[in-house]
Length: 413
Length: 92
Image (cartoon, rainbow over all chains, first blue to last red; front, side):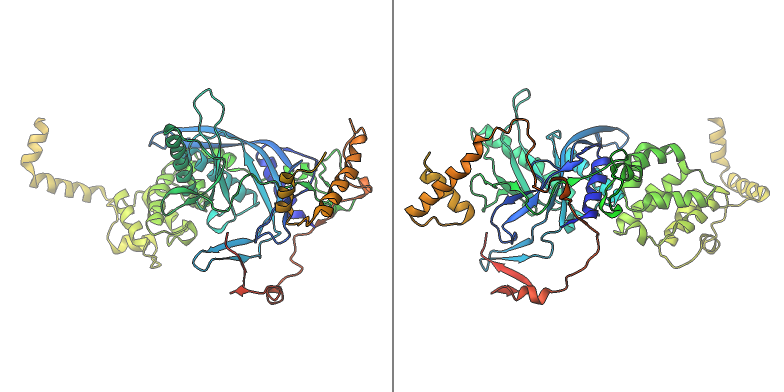
């Protein structure tokens, strides 16, 4: 039986990726034998998937500077609904495979992309943006390490102007970093192989993260014949829109594409634009804000609670707060300094009650998370800026008197 | 058209069936011939049928609530061999 939430998630994702949603899509059986596929077949959408012909836009930094970003696009061939298999753990020492069937039968969305990317960096950037989109939509938490998002990379090489070469499929990629490594390694391996007069086999390879290379997978023999046939137990999936909505159907059984479209949240690219427009920060700042879970919200919270201009606040967020969190491997949620505390500190700075150097000192103290307020810390460490003009003059005069020689040298130029 | 040994081997491997003897192969041959009669119908411009129920066959969409489960023990009893809640299968 098909789960309604799966269909909604697929439609949302399809719409977010500018796909054409097929109002009628079909289910098929894909047959093969494997220990983690107890039924001997997997239900998928081979003939007519739920969504087709979309695109995913992502950004890349050219060179080392973050300030030069370029936008690229990868076409989405299709999105299909299918069943998950169980999870296999290979125990080579005892010559056995352990199978966990907990996730068998659970619904999956498979996204197929066209070969529009040319290196590991592009693949990584595209998948990262996809991850953010999926998380924003709520379709998936998309954490690769937990198998919530799985990526198989298909890699081929060819000379410019010539047709695409034979491709290999690389599996067992468990993070975005490894995705870039695996793709780049495979590109180099294929170039080397062809350079030596060899050929590329249309095979499946596994990425070995320890060695940083791809190795052939032992269990794939020749071309698989999946004997696709229509799934006899699932009739076509019919989706509706505002125009085609049936009058007399049970509300719970109807999925309205337009209704879902109206309720799509702001996608990451839109959120970034809004941040730049609203706060006057740079585009690359908006990328960093969205790249860290909770950071954008933290920034906006601080801005609300302080008189300091957002353009100045962003520096404190990206340079001070973020680097501290990174150093201590903390998430924004785990920050010992709350947005309230930081705003409080920035207000002291803004009112010129302390200097910027003093502010950094106070911040260092606040990281300890001992519960002191910025004002308490300022008083404790006597970091207040002297506001009294007379007192300042006296001090300056004393310094000048003490350094008379230097002063004369300076004045003479 | 006869079914070649190559196709036979391929089918046996894919479906894990054993055609056993010549009689089995002949029966297979006749079954294919019978099914081939479908080709005699001209289906140009006709949409493939999903079911004789046509529009009345609606796909039931289930709500996303967990209604059953927590039966690990019973499920594992189905297997001859288990290791710490995993089913055991041959390697590869």
